Image 1 (tube, rainbow, N blue to C red):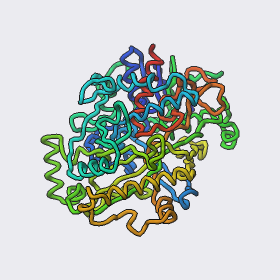
Image 2: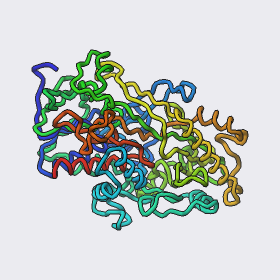
Image 3: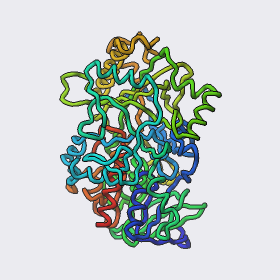
Image 4: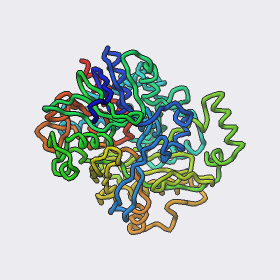
Length: 536
């Protein structure tokens, strides 16, 4: 960095203005601290971001999405995927499908077993509640006083009820609240929305303090590295408006760049596996072999059915219907324009003898296909569902591609690298096929579009799964939290990077293992807890 670079200074410097970074900025400013928040993407103030159905135009759009590419996946015939990551204030919470879930209590109790003491479900529930403003009101499991809007669906479709009833008829219990007493069952999702609009942490936490004198917010600020001297994180070096700049932290540097970005920045800063760093000519200041490792993602597979009733595809492709729905949204903030990625959820056992659920369903009265680089809406009257493994066994890694901060990192993740995950997808798909053949649905189904009735044997199912599976966009784990004596952990239970003072990682990358749910809610919880660790 040039010695004449512009220097800024604050109590805390936050690298990353995503779901976690916006929470941290708000809580620290509220506590009377000065904060510099650096976001590499742009502003989130766009109808494409705030209108919920606009998410279909965000993923894969280079204006809002970093569009990371994976390495060829040997578990799926060398397939290369595009991994979305929010290139906008609010991060992936500004482009995601808005499903609000916490996961299962056992997920967090498992974190404790993996070395994250103090992160059991009983201990993290208060931070979920601190964040939540649920339109259904307060209860033992919910709050209506937080900043993050959590709302019921504002769009209805008759096939949703038909699907729920069919699941119940096959023995899957009805669940009125996936974030309540139990997670297993079938029911309707809630979404991170408020007043019919997306409610990201950029909107709910950051927007109200946008002009606060203690907040310096910089978008299009691309972090190059964290400056570490004598084992202390002193500053963040970044590019902004074509110039190199430095943000000095009087108290701490907080890394919140996400599961892909955080390990990359650590390695560029000389923190990580020394052998890899040396290959790129980067001096190792802290040998931490776990940086970038432990990458986890939910694998999914799509089933879709042509039906004999009008689905939301017609609204999307008919100009006059699209106009009618736009008017409905403008006047009432209701209808298809408010749709999250999915309407009905199912957490179920793919085999009856299993002790707990092992798969999740995202069902929607809308037919689409997921390709390696985009989502394609069908023009037919079609419904679809994604089956995903709740607790996958496959693991991958994030590695540096070069010492140039502008180069995207290497994402090496064999999505179906564990045969057990393939088995779960096949068994789960068969359960769903049986539901669509049940008396409750068969009169409405014209044909199975994906995978098609010809797929019946284990071999055919495996071929379909390996050819058509996709990531559910829930990557975690690359800066794993754990016991300080564990050589593979990166941060301790207070999110402090091992062996480095005044540096913490606070985002989805610290999760020791994937929760059995969409990950935005848990990420916000981590940020709420992280903020309290800093201000207590």
